Amino acid sequence: KQEVTQIPAALSVPEGENLVLNCSFTDSAIYNLQWFRQDPGKGLTSLLLIQSSQREQTSGRLNASLDKSSGRSTLYIAASQPGDSATYLCATERYNQGGKLIFGQGTELSVKP
Amino acid sequence: DGGITQSPKYLFRKEGQNVTLSCEQNLNHDAMYWYRQDPGQGLRLIYYSQIVNDFQKGDIAEGYSVSREKKESFPLTVTSAQKNPTAFYLCASELAGGLNEQFFGPGTRLTVL
Image (cartoon, rainbow over all chains, first blue to last red; front, side, top):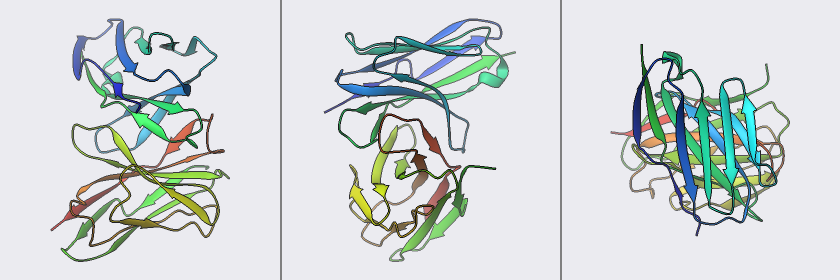
């Protein structure tokens, strides 16, 4: 059974700092891994999708990496801003599971001005 | 504008009542999903549908029911058999069931009085 873990559960950094969020998973038989952002009381916003054959994806100040062999993914945020404050969730999609996502519990990020 | 809508945003239910949460998408996606989110936990899959008139149970389907009569719509009914229905409910869709990005609606917060 796939288990997805995100550590730390909460992170507070000063504005302008570069930071890394971690995601680990127990079963490497995945189609892809997706990173989401969730603001309080809101739905999820997709940030990046990394296919199993890819090593990384970039979008603006965000860079996500995937290492299937070690069961790890990281989300790198450059030059953090107060507007980046939110909960970040990672989720894996396993082979032959029809799109079912297994989510981590999220990392709550606070960027202080 | 293309997207996923959920209604209502807030819903209150009395003990013993069934309630139905609406989810509509105009993205022409084949697959649709219902997740439940509890405080401090990741999302858990309730039901999913990869095609009209077909759906499968997710990890926590007990006490819930769904229908998929139209491609655009995937309503979720929370029945009186669901013992702890207070949660945030999120609907998602995907172009096809697997390998693609999932997009989420804004969510419905259900509270049992």
